[in-house]
Structures are given as structure tokens and as C-alpha cells.
Length: 193
Image 1: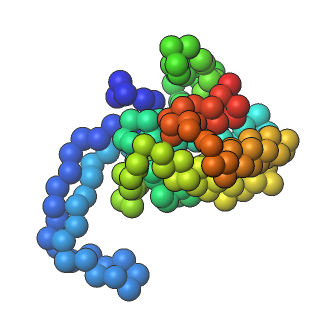
Image 2: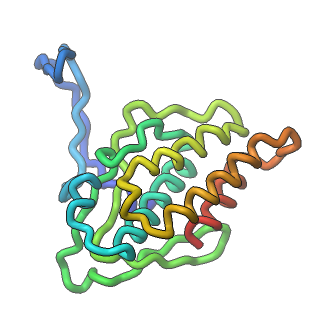
Image 3: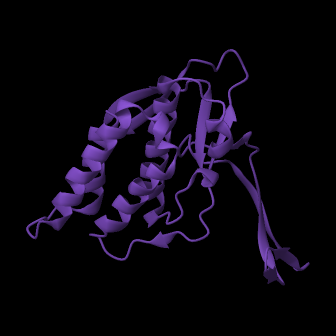
């Protein structure tokens, strides 16, 4: 996958006409996707995390995966939750401790993998941005990250909250003429870089 390290490889999709029941809902047909294997979701991974630096690294990868999703698809995810982020444990000793390269605004940044790669998934209720200025949807996806066991965040929680509040206030200013993707890059630059 050359687009981004936070998207699982997609192999095939197909329509299944065999009825499927999920809780009270019965689906007569549905689309199934065959994708790259993951080791679990973030809820499961958070049970293993032992220190703040690992947790901070995972949150950084989540932020970068949301940013990448917005930039590549021009959509808001609309269902940011720990079950919709998957991970792969890097078992190959040659991969552990390596850095993932990102290029933003023609600058190269590196984020250490910390033995896990995080993937954004489940785009079923994603919505196309309505206008070039749909900043509220961008910010909503980032605010929903707060649902991820914030007690483990340590000081990072306060930094993250401060940055999001700052950009929420910027949204409320009537003279805000910044396009939505510049606005998002400003948020990313303060959150992780």
C-alpha cells in the first residue's frame, strides 16, 4: 500500500445474498470485504499498553490516520471509536523500533512505530465533505478520539484538549477564511509535530 501506512490492504469485495442477522437487524444482502489481516482493535490493544510513551505513540498514529483519511478521501469518518482502529503487531525484529515516514507540506517527518502500526477502518458511514469549508466535520473526528481511555494519556490529554479548543474557537470567528485542509494541517502541526 503506497498511499499511506494507516490503510489496510484491500483485496476484494463481493455481494453476499445469504441473510445475516446482527442483533435485531436482518440483512438480506450485504457487501463483504477481504482485507489485510490485523491483530485486533484498539480496545484490545489498550489492555496491553504499559506506559505513557507507547500510548502517546498510538494516539499520534491515530491522529495521523484521521488526517490521512480526510486528505485522501475528502470525507469525514463519522464513526471514530476504538473498535474502528485496528493494529498489527510488528513481530519481525527488523521492523521493531523503525520509523514511519510522513510528508506534509513538502517536509519529511518520522514517527517511531513502537512495535505497532495503527489502521483506520470501517468507513461505512463516512460522508463526503459538503463544501470546501466543512471544518466542523474535521474537528468532530478529532474530538471523538477523546473516547479512547483518556486516563492513560497523562499530560498529552491536556495538550490535545488545549489544541482542539483553540481550533474550535477559531471556527467561531466570523472572519475565518482559512480553507479546511489548511485548517487541518494547522491542527496536525500543533498536535504532533
